[in-house]
Image 1: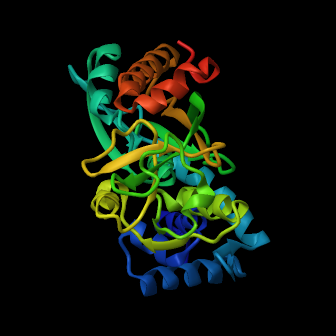
Image 2: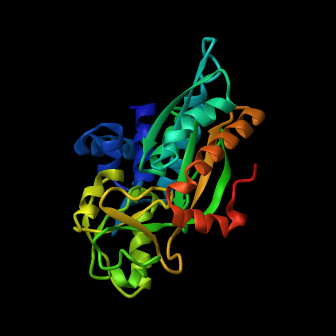
Length: 317
């Protein structure tokens, strides 16, 4: 039996997701089918590629070697026909973005800068999934948000440029919450709350929440798992609190407040495939995304105040 592309995607998905179950969900397979494919690969290469850990699975030394080579092969395969498209009057630029307030402006702002392109948009709570889609040629461009202390691996032909090097994460509360009238909230004052898991847990957001809460002297009670905006009714009903991107306006029945001392921060990165955009086009893309982001600074006046006080984080245009 020989390895095929399906096998390579299997082991890379397991490595990126850190779990056979999550990798199976990403590839649309059942867990038993995913496990069987992994076993076949291990039989071919002659050893175990992963070992179980308290947080999932980790590559063995042999696994790291095989995964590194598999990624090289997959990059070449995904780019194989990338420059053989049938020319059209209007090209489609496939753009991915994490769940930000500025998604409402991205299509128009990027379209203004990249004339001759139709813009398609895929919104994901996970920057890891967007980076994978970019690496596999399913996206041409992605705007990635990453919590401080964690990172997303990007490999050729993907290039990147930082859009916002640092910004604080805010917290959403019910408008009837005992702390709702404060201009900023101390994380330690939320020790008795029920928490909604932050979006993009695979990116480290949940681990970062737990670490910040432990530093504040408590273990968070993460009671709910609601992707992206699905947790807003829970917050409005006073059933839980959640961390949010600071550009989002408060949903009805809620308030959004800064956390004192900025216990969590994140950054925004623009990533693109160099086989789809040249240097000048990438620069125009950056300007378009920067304009889209700054269009929404006033959606949350408290974030606008922070932004104006920190010119060092403004996009370089």
